[in-house]
Length: 460
Ligand SMILES: *Cc1c(COP(=O)(O)O)cnc(C)c1O
Image 1 (cartoon, rainbow, N blue to C red):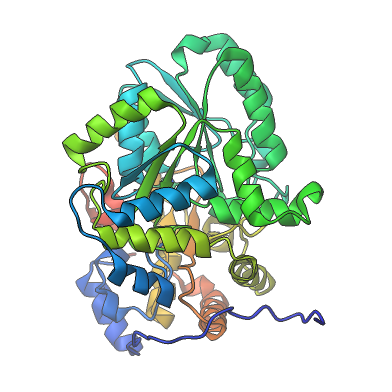
Image 2: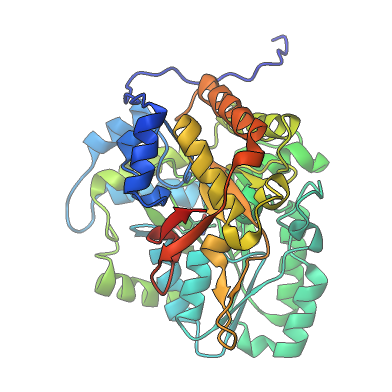
């Protein structure tokens, strides 16, 4: 077939949820009621919700058919057999353990393999991964390549692990203190930057010298595989399915939040080839999640997950998925926003520090931009900057800003049309044209931890 430039949504819409149009006045009222915290705005007051891509996607008719097919037997359910077979075929691991979401798989993995003082290297630990490592008294270390920390660098695989730093870490800390090494694919930080097959292979080679197993935090396995197909010449004619199998073949196991590339609203997996470890993990699963053939989910959820994991491998879908992120990222750049380059798989990050350079970090430029996007066009995004990661200096009592002031626009899967994205761009342009009038905020009330969820703000 002739190649056309337009990448279309490779689906039609059969079931819809209405979006409520709101006036700016209504949104200003909602903001005041929510004390300028977007987590506290009721979802019906939001036009385009780009808060997260986690569990917010649309399921297919086949997945809804799976929901009806669900077998709710407590033990030995047919839904589990279908999920187990799918996951074994797609990923190649022997033991498939369902969990209610990714962090449950992480908690079970780290509680069984970590002891106090252990070290877990990763390209970049996702926040729940880091928290689960640390809650075992272990140390979570990030070893992404330097290019991965430079927002404007266009390295094709900014999620890669720094192999030399990994070798040094093992030499300095001792292999006996490193029970496993993780690789997050795609690397969540920076909006889903991929890891190359060559890097996965090199990591494995280093680990083999010391007998350390590799695990993948494989939430976005299909997006990472498609980036490998597009950017690693050797794989340009390889099926995504085969790329996924090869990525997984270098690992002893993986954790997956199925709320990402599982295309479901809830669910997760813990996989391993290590039988004795799997036995311990299942014992713990029974204690806290449920029997190993349902792991805290309903049978119907297992079926939806099993169908979703197969559907996400469709290359028409993946082409559309990455094209949507690229379209949003490139157009934001062209209208004058500084964004993290190149566009990742599931989100675009705006550099709010340089875009709103008249607002100092301690007046939260990322949050100020998020508030303005909501007020102007009903768009919800997520600040990843000083509101989320700022720290109070214990000695001086003063607030220390985060390293970067970012605003994340995450894209739910199969949920928004091209005109939704065009609308986001139009609103973003309008906001940027008035940027000098955008004001910072100050916090008037905050909890001790994870303040971004509940803090109250005041406009300056
Ligand atoms: C979402 C996510 C997790 C945690 O999964 P939940 O389902 O939210 O518990 C872990 N790692 C990465 C990379 C993720 O994106």
